[in-house]
Length: 363
Image (cartoon, rainbow, N blue to C red):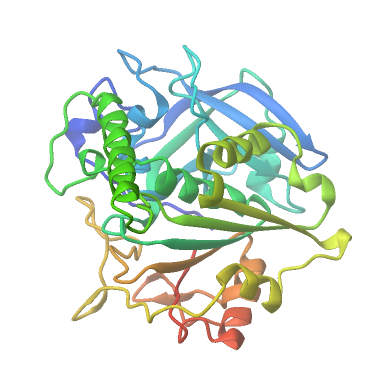
């Protein structure tokens, strides 16, 4: 099925500025600069825009509107069959090398009979392909207070989970980096803003320690359950493991990941999810208007349902192949001509997690 339904998240003027890569109306040419095999059926592709922003900024700066709002994806075009599919970029490592500021990396797994995954898996270094976006999958705006996020990821769904961890733990929800409807953004703001914010948070923590108050927690706890069929799919070396190691080193107890592998007889089941959720939480209510879900503001329409805020403190997200998402959380449902969330089903319905205080979102 051709997928041309997308969310654009900025102004035309901004997209045409030299510090931004994407054009929401057409595919932007990217060149494959690196192809890393991480297993027999999976590769990490590093793509660089043919026209680099000038002056070059770091990855968070170039793609800041996407990183500031939540998990996001881009469309890949298969030119021979004229089809497009969405893929989620991996978050950048903290230290971006000069010349790699605009690079995006994607974990691609070759699926049996998959026209797009087969095409991407067969690309060689130097090939050029078209990307369009970014498309917001879940908006974190208004959720700075969320204290716990559990992410159940199957296979390449780990990319969305690592994106969520990056956004929530690396400080990109800072107010200076939020998208505001009608905002015309000029040059990318300096990372000094983020560094100043981190310094302020550390100072507040020290002050509260001295006053004997409960430890100040600027970031939520992010737990990831990553399920794969084979041991080699865990990618014990390579870009994915580097990102995981970086998040562990930088955020300690705020970041946790558990590996589940079918051939090792460790599976996603109710007991594993229960262990990640811990004790029951307060009831969570996702903000709605009179017509239902509140969509993220977009100057180009509401082509997907994206919540703006969760009023309490716990969120459970599920990503991965369609069958995996349905097994864990139930099927999505077409509502008013577009894909909606549907009811919570699968393992999570049997566990009654929604009634116990967890907001559930399927990617």
